[in-house]
Image (cartoon, rainbow, N blue to C red; front, side, top):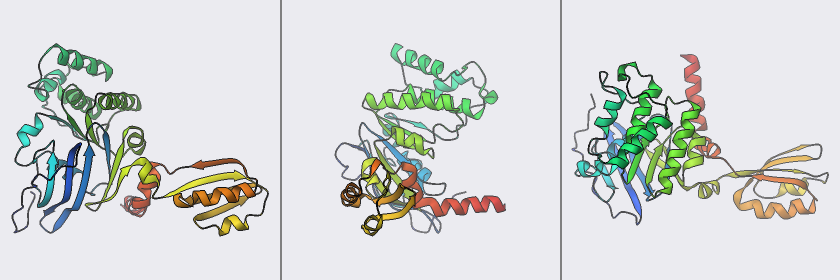
Length: 324
């Protein structure tokens, strides 16, 4: 049972929402007894875009989503979802959003089709029925089977079909591809691309970095209840280093002495090093003087950005698993 502190939580009141933002969260906190799950968290989800939400287990992702859905009352801070306070206007908000949890629990005696009907109650018309049947076919779901016979992946398909068949403004997805095989993950990717093309807004919480990198316009990384990075992938890449590879038989002393160059490795005439983004323009003239050829500059991946903040934590988690 969840316990709270002695101080009654204040509702997460609507903020002056960022223009063209479907979700705006500012200085959000949530405590459970002495545990602070969210600690001054900020989040902006622009309308018509896909926003990635990254962080390891326990970072505060699920707590944030539960606050946005109106399932938890924030201790303090401000939140705006589609222009409304999620705690006091949860019913109105839920008419305009669809939610996919990471672990879908269904009514065991209902068929998959019946569960979809329950989850999409209120949706009417031939267009909805066509969309529903299209998604059932795409995700290769047998809607006649009882939910109790479904694997985790098939339960997840039910949630995806129900959410994606709804004609709403906002889609909140918490590890939506959990339990899906690679083929179904590709179908999911296609469907999110379709949502964005239609001008819909998606908040995508996922641990699959390649999925987020492929789909998302902006990314927010959360750690210990705080947002540690937020922006477009291009903006976040400016915060870390690119990898440079080249071929040159010239002396590398000047290159090694250039500010912003790190971890220079020379193997015969092959060079490899990391460079701060701000120093790339300083490095290029040096490489030109060295008559370097076969030059490639690889920007950091989302995984690089993620590991920058979580590498130590993930290593500790791995050590703990090995010891257990």
